[in-house]
Image (cartoon, rainbow, N blue to C red; front, side):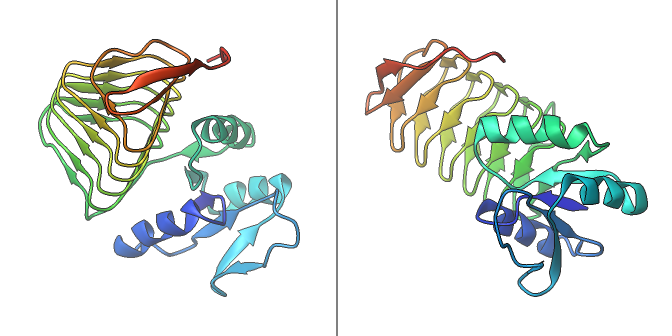
Amino acid sequence: MVIIGAKGFAKEVLQVFYDQKSLTNLVFFDDTTKNIEKKLFNQFPIITSIEELANYFNNYGKEYTLGVGSPYTRLKLYQKINRVGGLLVSSTSPKASIGSFDTTIGQGVNIMSGTTITNSISIGKGCLINLHCTIGHDTIIDDFTELSPGVHISGNCTIGKLCSIGTNATILPNIKIGNNVIVGAGSTITKDIPDNSLVYGSPGKIIKQLPIQNI
């Protein structure tokens, strides 16, 4: 298994694999940090070139998970790693609670410790559900959206692609949030938010329009 990234959030993903007792042949990949150490915590090898990563896939299996946080960075890495044969898989903390009925988790989702996902939930590909989040019934979260620690999403909500929901934000019931939306930390969202918006405050207000992204 390869964790993509070798800093920051990747260290938290490592703890998920430790808790799962799944450290065999675990390595990290970072081809952007200059003069990076050869091993993380003097134990886990760090692959530093895409060619070396392709070779690892050929010899030890193609599975990888994302160890970075930004939605667009996650999407770009997903595209890059798949081009050399990688197979994106999810990592789910055994300390998370996931509903048993009508809940679907897409390919390559990170679900971190302390999170509660209830029933009738749909989470799309490449999402990050961070520490101590809650997601209420009949909620849909689209691809490559990030929930920062402590986000609370009430029931019957819809969140689009490539959104970033800030730490301790709250989304009230029956809210629809479009694609490419940033919700500031601590905000309370009380009404629908259109695509390409930066929202902040309690109640949340649109601060500015974001550049349209090709999704």
